[in-house]
Every structure is written in structure tokens, then in C-alpha cells.
Image 1 (cartoon, rainbow, N blue to C red):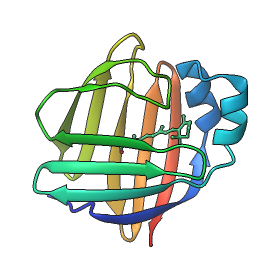
Image 2: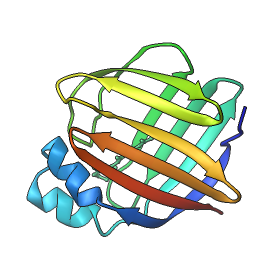
Image 3: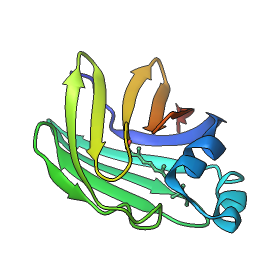
Image 4: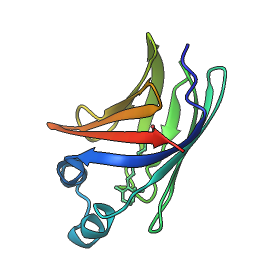
Length: 133
Ligand code: RET
């Protein structure tokens, strides 16, 4: 399958505000968060992943093995706990985050030197593009 390892810098982000609203993120946090240009640092060892989202404001860490359900606490985001599981859909990484929020999850894939990330919550979809550093 695909190799996501590397450092990726945000270039474009569409409807991050809608996604944050769906998560119930407060106004002050949204104002700061939408100005950020986060960086993703991905370490992939076969089906084991460490994905670090870092910014000047707040960081988020998620670690998982494809196909193994894990508890995700979403600390620093909305703080809700989810039972999450990531699977391969061809060369796309698809995460389903089961919890209080309906239709919550994300999909990650690579095209050339760009990383695409679609993040979903309820009826909101945010699309981001990251460029390889
Ligand atoms: C930041 C800043 C504080 C507010 C919010 C954030 C959102 C982080 C998100 C991370 C998603 C990570 C994923 C990793 C797997 O590929 C930037 C920490 C709301 C949405 C999907």
C-alpha cells in the first residue's frame, strides 16, 4: 500500500469552520484555529501509524494500527471520546470515529507530493491539502 511517511505542510483548507462548528468547538478556539497552518508528521511502519498534527497553538497526536479498534480521546479538539478504526480502501486510509457525533471520520490519500485529507462530522466535510516538505 501507499507510504504516508514524511512531513507535510498545509496549503489549502476548505470548510474547516463548518467542521469545527459541527464538533461544537467554541468561537475563540475557532477564530485561532482557522488561521493556523498545521504541519503533519507521519510515521508509518507497515500498518502502524503515528500521525502528529502540530501548530503554534495546539497539537494533536493519534496512533493506530490499521484494522485495530482504538479509543480516541480527541484531546485538544472537542474532547469527546470515540471508538475509532482505520482501514485501507485501496491506497486511501479511512477512519471511522464512532461516538456521540454521527458520520464522524476522515480519509487520507496521496497524489504526487500532496497529501489529501477529508475530515467529516455530521453533515460537514472539510477538505485539506498538504504539500510534502
Ligand atoms: C487543531 C488546533 C486546535 C483546534 C482544532 C485542531 C484540529 C485538528 C484536527 C486534526 C485531525 C487529525 C487527523 C489525523 C489523521 O490523519 C489544528 C489541533 C480543531 C482536526 C484527521
